[in-house]
Length: 98
Image 1 (cartoon, rainbow, N blue to C red):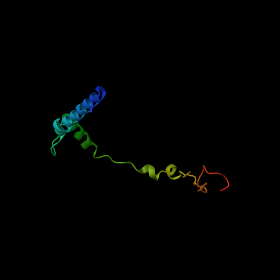
Image 2: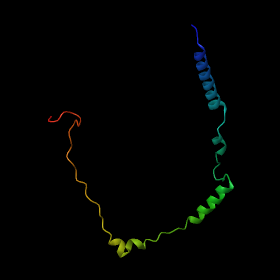
Image 3: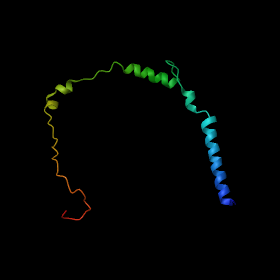
């Protein structure tokens, strides 16, 4: 069996890609392993400021008086009913009259 130069290059390229993939998936550590947080401990200053801002948002209350306003209660639903249409031919590309 005689391998041509093109076949040898194809096999060598495939082998290099496979070895590179094997090395990447089994030997390279991912950066997500470093970002695991311990319970209760913020990871950065930005996270601490975010948690502080969220703590300030807790006392938010919604004013529901708008739901009792006469202009709101006078609104009318303008939806139109969808009328079901009859089903068409079973084979739209078939011959007519059948």
